[in-house]
Image 1 (tube, rainbow, N blue to C red):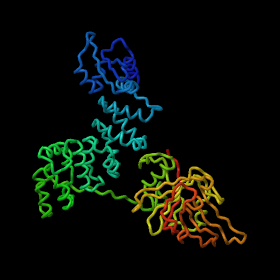
Image 2 (image 1 turned 60 degrees about the vertical axis):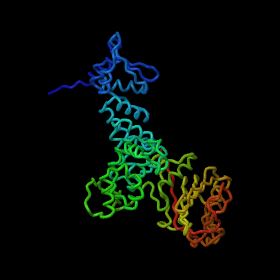
Image 3 (image 1 turned 90 degrees about the horizontal axis):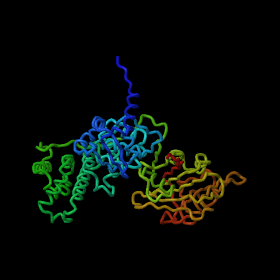
Length: 492
């Protein structure tokens, strides 16, 4: 039987840390603040301090000084309390503090603490990690101590490679980060694109290389090969088409091993013949597994728009100047109505949408593939006009439409038109709805028999009146191929 008294032991060591009479190490951190400590405790608990203390000379009082100017006093105070007492207090701690503490723990080679904080961030702060994607992803590759976070982010990037490969700062990506991505078997990029991005990164590491490839010397190719020596083994060369091998790889054949290039040429002529070079398997395409039965739609389940469209609309709702990323969009789009599922009559709209506020209407125009829509922060009610300064209409980038168009309300008195008034015979109705007098109108101009009001009957149109700019280049009437109404719910 063994009795363990860790609480008392931890308390005693914390008291030792606070004892200023017997220290033999001074650690100077940011803002010239100093902490005192004991070399035997530091060396026992941290491989980093063991190495540092062996290389630092004592002064005449037998005290060693270590400089760590990149760490704040709050972070280092927590590190020391962990080293001495095995305790970390994170009650009410901001996420950035937890992240900085993890980075410091990694730097001091405190493996147990590093792994614990990594898991804490992944399990409880994933939204923060995603919204600070670039900052965190680059930081974790400054040291190779964060394998859990590396896997967390690589899982995202393999599905959405443009987050890194098309980023403005791609060329400054750490080599270890690029190699980590190239190793991924499920990276969702064509292999020739992976090759092109790798070459682009390698050239950026050698800014003195001539811009014209025809002017390159053997020394230039050697410089590029040296920069890419850790990356090239992970390209799946034999998964690249013959045309791309000839057009994309051949200009850089001097950075490839001679045997590999000879095998690639052989592969072009006799693809079934065995080669001497190592052939990596093709990357696997991700296949979305559908459940056997779907009873509820997912958080964003649209037959018309993409997640990127939803992020753009969310940005407009919040009047942001830069578009939200896929991972920090603060809204959930909850489907209320879909024309192809529920019907296209005005009656259906009122049955489904009456009383709902903060809604987005998404329209797919028949025959043009245009995606039009509008945001209504007000409740849909059978009234003449809804007055608001926060509504807007739009046309979304799609197919041949190269750029999205945003048009905010100009005359707030006529922001939302939502009327459905039956006459005394209960047959004829003014049955339409929309944004402004005519800016985005769904339904006919005049009264119609209720059952005949159908959005697929060429009764919709756009003509600038009360919003800033038109969202179509024509005022011709159009039919709706499909449309959806989403309730926009704030999630963060």
